[in-house]
Image 1 (cartoon, one colour):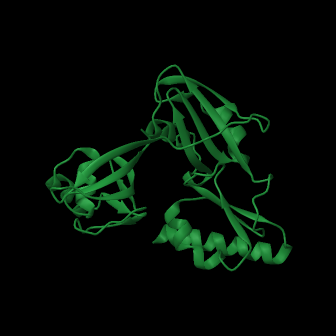
Image 2: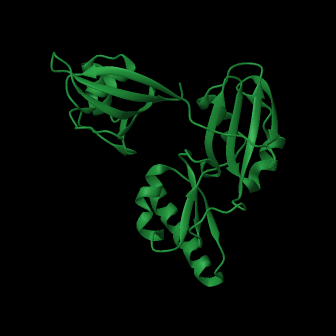
Image 3: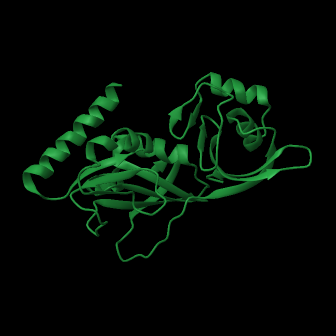
Length: 242
């Protein structure tokens, strides 16, 4: 609650600055839960949300314009390693330089290369202070504006069947777990449904729901296809980062 109060105060300060100057103001990166919870503060003002690419999850809030403009203060840092990278190690090493989480946006990884979206004002600091991911030496550089790169979140499509459209069933099907184990994960507060903590394993789910399981990953219930002859429900899941 203390962190949410701090985020709210920061948004209010940005709104006051916009009202005073009439110029576009930017927050640092917000996660999806913050975007939803703080919507009532900024929604009545001209604004847009952008994280550096269309599918970005973490986004900056710009107050003062309805249209995305070129001057958004987002930089992209490229990290190249001799070994395959993973999100946890990259994020940990980036934050290990002493910067805060809200100046770091999405991290897109392909094998041994990571592209890290950050606020422009800390990009130079990060390049100067990040030289390892874990114990591995890495090369770090700034992606220039004239480099035409396309970013997308890696997803693995899973076609499967479940007995019913409930939270623990989908978790079990996605990660190859038993219903009992999936149920315990929910009860132990390790599962978020659409960015909110859920403690009820039998919580109904629907198309478009995003489910995050701590220690396993996150997935979307992409499509419900109907029932099989054995009265099971055919579904398609998108497992992120695979």
